[in-house]
Image (cartoon, rainbow, N blue to C red; front, side):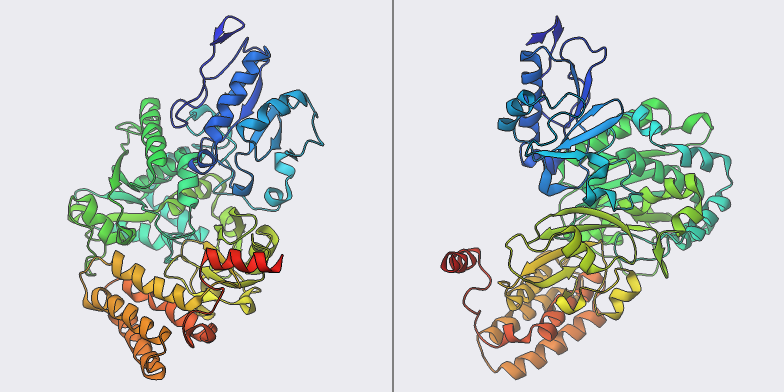
Length: 560
């Protein structure tokens, strides 16, 4: 197909070249952004992009279509943006059928179609976005993920350039002063890890990025990998300079095929541009990155199981000590962080430790990407400084439940996180405060449930999940989870309920105290929290109307 004598390429796979579709004469063309993120593509973004290109060609309108990442407003995906004279206006959700009507309304003209049902106004002014504190995700959804020029224009590589001028100890001191803690869930001070690896003796050292994001309700790693992959590579390079490593590995879960393609291409682009490889930005210093794809084991989110898998073995947790910082990948000193932790390093180096420390509260410094999922009206990613309340996230950003029914429970921190009731809605979201409340922040996932949820069934799911995902190395986790499912089934069936409750609590104590890693050690969290906060759900067989979509639909039909 052609327009204006130029070839028009209709987008197919959104993980290919992300900026190639220019109908007509490109001079003075209008830029249109359609997310190529897998969440947007799952609801038709590729079809929307094709429709926009076809419609523009048919009308002889010149556009430049860019496949950006998602800004995280997942309830508005596909969120299409039109940029003219530096101003981006948003429309969403835009499916392919809506495209002709948008062209009829003149949506590409300055200030046009403000009253169109899909018009969201200037993107940066959308309240859901405007009130956030975007640090890690400042570029996500803004730039072409695979364009280094875009990355530079929006502040990229400044941190790496500063790191190349600094001594390793100075880089480590900057990270320590920033208060950055591991965003993978443990919240361990990142600077102490960097300092330990830097001081460790070894003829070779490694930096490993654990991108095996497997917690239910979490997607921040994926959004960043698909929307701003260069930030992760820059963070890894900075870490390598600080600790004395010349090689890095990204361990990415196989369930993220789109992220795999984007990250693989980003590594190639960075290497071709000379800021990965034997001579980073002409400094004479080496650092390169290799992508490895995991086989999908949840336990490989644990750092030592990931290292085992990277070495080509089954992902089984290692006993500690030795710590990976002393003897990690192939027995060498290894710095292991998750995606968000490494992606924070460029900001710290570019803006200084004080700029990072200015966000947050107490010992929880910086920002945290909170992921809203489950039965929530406006699901997506919210980046705010630590200290924002759960109520602000669930009711303010999330808008309450998608069903319109009352919120009953919120699980924070993935499948091993505790269940909280509405009495905790005013809790401040930081590491220490959540621990005081009997929970954990984890990777920042927040899953919302309305009053139709059966918490006894959710507790059983936690035990069954552990039984399925356990690496099998230690008895408390391997056997305890299986027995836990059996005990919960007896409780729910009303068999000797008090004795079985006591047995369940004892079993959870053994798993918590004796498991080799957090897989078994944290599984009691959802079980015991559900038992303590929602005891009525354990008093007999599942109550009518709870626990199934069919039952919920039936109740809603009765109410109508």
